Length: 588
Image (cartoon, rainbow, N blue to C red):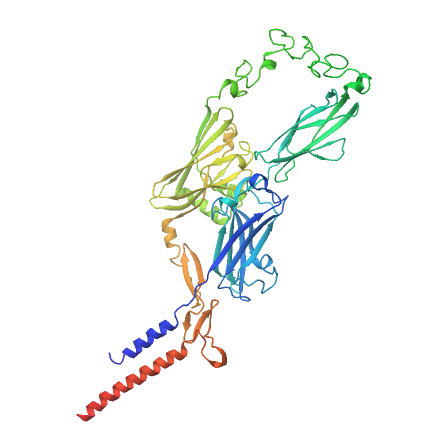
């Protein structure tokens, strides 16, 4: 025991000398989205019509210029980490950060580097709505490509913007195409309308007459036009929303007549609307101030009613939605203001219990763009998970289809990460924008094919996925176009636990920590300065000789001299102890 004590002390000293002394700190800080538009305190954006700049900062205090590389990916997310849609993947940060050099060494990310990405491409499948930005950045060894540090940033709800890819619709309510307008005495009113799926996003109306210069009418839905005489005029109108989506140009042709010019009386003379005389070209339709209604002119005007002039007036012409009178021609579906809301009525119900065939699974998942792993998983899924569908179609002011998917774990083991793919026939719904659900889902194909995220299921547990197809009625005919829903992804708890059983993640590098999780290996670099052998330390994931300071002196992190001194002291102490014992024996 006396002779082993120095060895134990030496071991303890060595362990302290080579203990890690620093940890990498890797951060990504999201700054902002900037765009030329910022209407009403919100951002309406279409990357195909506006360049959208995304700003962020990146820092990695363990970054080694010339050895490490840095990449980043940007996603659209509803919540942090969702990564619902990819804006850009695996971009070399040197082109977007710091000096923005496309060649090494680029920026030194051990200090804060300002970065930005100009987003100007469409995102396939991403529906209109509020989104946030997820930024994921990571450094890796250029030679090996192993991720060594990962940092993320999430824009948060305060930076939400509205992705608007939908073209608005528009129309010219008044006058109708081919109408004759009398400007009495000097003006003709034109009424414009426009609707947009994204309510409140119309930014302006552009107008022009006879292919002349475009007039910006702002958001005003009327335009007062003063004709210079009698002429046939072509009128064009284009509605534009805040994301610069332009509606189809609407065009009408109208015959404009100035009342005074038409009467030949010249300015200030002749008949005009408002002179209390119904003459010239004036009628009850063009000048109700001067002309009294005429029963028999096929116009139900003025004081005429169904009772006083049945020749001109019908129940339909007298019905006014909003007058609190539910007339015979009105109903809950045509005028809920007068007749009340329609009671919901179930018009169709059907339950689907069939399981998908292998050919159906392969066909649908191939159309959805899912890979071979998803197809292989889906082909095995019916042995573990069953899925059925129930449809209920309700008719009120609209006809909506309420669909419920019943998902059940049919095994005695926990099933993890269940996802269900639903192929919705185009004969039922034109696009995925008509799908609404409280269950998270991904739009795989806009036509539509969607994937619902169910999650984990305990042994025998059932889960329900409910979604609504807005104003998309299922009926006996198009119900035949549905195919059985299918599980696209799942893993049994037993498989997950045994996934690493026969996998070796040892990369024979003493400067990495080797781990296996659910069948996937990770080899993470240990902190620089960690001992990897006598006189050796880890640096940037490689085992190298311990560095020395200037003029051959031991560096600040080199403890070799200290160890040597301690070793000599221990040896001398042990020798002195041995010598004293030996001398004592001789004196006896």
